[in-house]
Image (cartoon, rainbow, N blue to C red; front, side, top):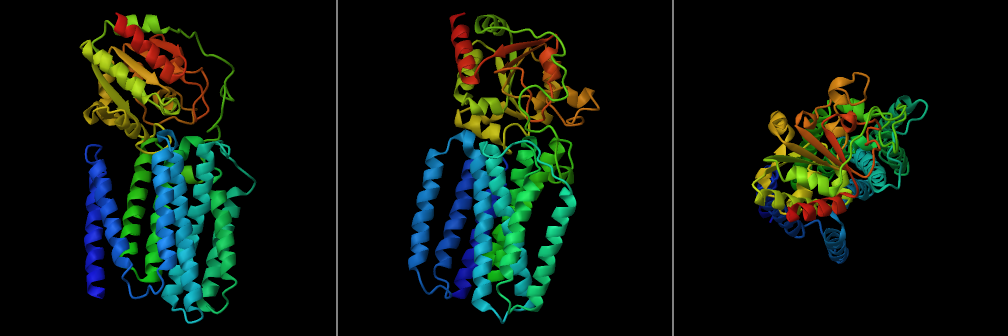
Length: 460
């Protein structure tokens, strides 16, 4: 039976790896998700036949409850709430690792081998940090916790001290495993550490934070796998951990930031609302257009690039944007979508929203593949995006986003920006593009604005 279990784990791991590979492309992502889910189903079923399981009542209750909660989330959570849900699920994964590690400790204490004790401490540390850190990330994305950078005196020394305390107590427990109560202090300190590590990260850095916490949840699962000596958990956790850290580094590169810069503080103005703190007011004249005027402009162009941002997600405007693109294409206009890696609240947020609206995958173009095309484009329509098209990233060395790769929307012949107002983005700074001579502001809710524009365009 043990051989069958291990072979099934191996097959499930192949499904995980193959599914993860397919998730790298929007065209195969759905199949990749199904393959990974199939692998997980195989792993769960075969684990139920493990000789260590002697009571199935609570397992069945857990399966039913978990399936009901998961199905409810999948059916009821809107796409705009997907980043929050991902953050929350990361936290639940970390919390589960902590509970499993604690359970195993109390099961085998006081006869705990050094290697097992070490992995238990690691699992509790990473799992606890992931749990509370992810809850803070969820709160920031949901608006429950401020999206601004939260700094406090001796921030980094305090975090370092807490980490050293966890390590010191962990070493003591490994050497003296009989003192079970002190293990709870490790959990408590690690939970506090998770809060203090994520709280200073501003809203602009949330995509990176979500990726990093996802990696943490994988590492916590892998550590728990070593605690339980379960190869499936080790492999699955290692895959999630490695994929998460790779994605995190890609996101940092897209923002021209170092990982330590994000983890240790972030932009001081991130998450600010209203005019930027350092701004003395508008930096030029703003030209605005209404739906009728903009429709007349679009009726005479041959190429359009749409740049989506979080404002599109908030307004649930992806379907209206797709309808506008359909109308333009019927008029012979070439339409494409420029996707910045950190647009939205999590990696791939814009891709998921537009795919939901049945936008063809080959029209979704990454930054590095479309940036050279902007000078030859008639009109760029920026919908709810801000920092990812801000020329200050190229021009202003004093700007907090200086050096961040941006979409070269300002190089187009005409730039149309749809926003509710001239307020700043998550970086908390004015967008120079608003005041450029080739820029037109199209104010209003993204969904209503795109629908009105589409109606006007159809009449021409």
